[in-house]
Length: 277
Image (cartoon, rainbow, N blue to C red; front, top):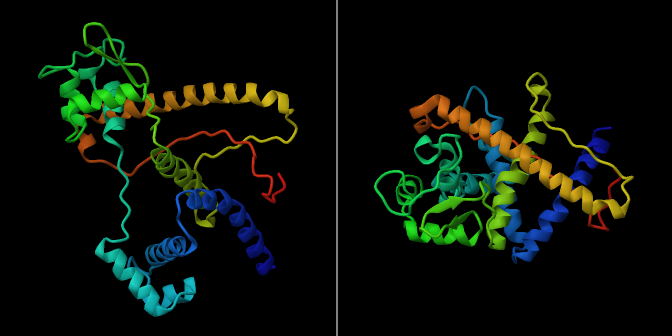
C-alpha cells in the first residue's frame, strides 16, 4: 500500500516536472545542474523541518531521510552555511516604485489613485518617488523603463501618469523568474501546507475549477473572461494589502513574512502529459 501511494505521488511529480524540464532545457540547464539544486533543497528542508527541540537535524538523520551520503550532506550543508546556496528574492525597483505610487499618500490624489507627478522636485515628484523607493536607480532610467513596459505615460507638460499597477517584465528570463517566484513557488507552497496532516486546522485558501467539457471554439472567450476577472480580483487584493500597510504606518519598516494571493488560468497543451482529469 505504501509503495502504491509513493508511486502515485512520484507520477504526479513526473507530470509537474514536465513544464519545469521544458524551462530548464530552454535555458541550457542540464540534468547535473538540476540535481545539485535538488540535493541542496533536500538537505536544506530535511535539516530545518525535521530537527528535534529546535535544533537542525543532524547529518546522519539527513542522510537517512534523503538517501545521500553523510559526506555529501556535510558538503551541501557547508555550502548552505557559507551563503553560496542562499536564495534571496526581492521585488524589483520598478515593482516597488509602482506599488508605492499606488499606496503612499504623498504620491496619491484625494481619491487614493496614483497622482500625476512632475518629473523633478524635492517633494511629490517622480524623482522623489524614485529616490525613496527605487534604490540607486536614476529617475531618468526608471522613467524610461516604466514607459517601455507600458506602465507609465508622459503628458505634454512632462508630467508622469501611472496607467498600470501591474509590472509585466519584457525580457523572457524576467517573466520566468517572476512567474516561478511569485506563481509556482506560492502555489506549490500552498499544496505542501494543505497536504500536511499537522496543518489540518490551519489550511490555506486554495480552490481550482476545472472541466473537460469545454468546446474548443469557446476557449478564446473563456481566456478573455478569465484574464479580466483575475485582474480585477488581484487588484482588489492589492488594495487590501495597501490598506494593511497604511494601517500599520511606520511599522512597515519591520517587515513580516511574505504573503501572496494568486489566481491562474490553465489549459493543457502538452499532448504527452499522462494524467486523467
